[in-house]
Length: 213
Image 1 (cartoon, rainbow, N blue to C red):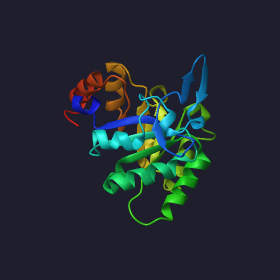
Image 2 (image 1 turned 180 degrees about the horizontal axis):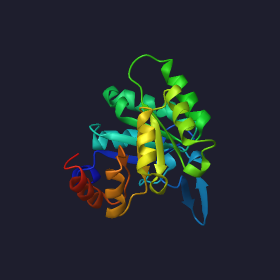
Image 3 (image 1 turned 90 degrees about the vertical axis):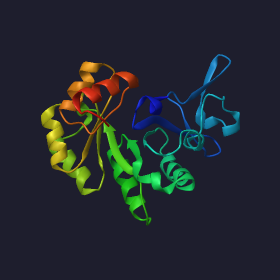
Image 4 (image 1 turned 120 degrees about the horizontal axis):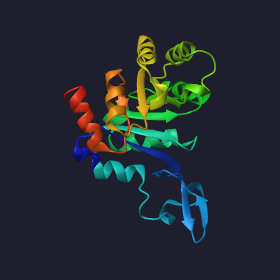
């Protein structure tokens, strides 16, 4: 539905099942009776039908869009890459893996650089208050280690910070943009991607500020 409404990308959280399948779910838990258990404690065939695998998403929605995936399991990155490569290798450079840990995202880039061919994009997802040192030093560190950009909450961004991130040739992504005024402000300040649960509101804001996707 998001793609039909005009979104140029989709977003989800990725977890691994007990048998190593990448699945998409926000909370990462499955309710059994009155108890909730982590997805990692179940095989793929034991999960409820409303939790799709990554492969099922790609086969259902195709691959002609950007896909942003929050890595909720530290081992999920390589499974994601293998899954996408098996279905459509040309999609890899439109897959954005969002990792909160600075050391981890740098290690992922080093790991992917060892393999020839197209690779996924990498973002550090964090909050401004969690960045140690200056944002300029963080941007330089990400650039030096070939991380593609940074993904911050909407409240953390301002025009000067976007300009700084762009100066290091990094992309600036913003999440939790649910209202038109927030979306239009984010687009005016130059964010490269915005995440919203309300696709119709987002598309209207993009059309008003940019014209078209």
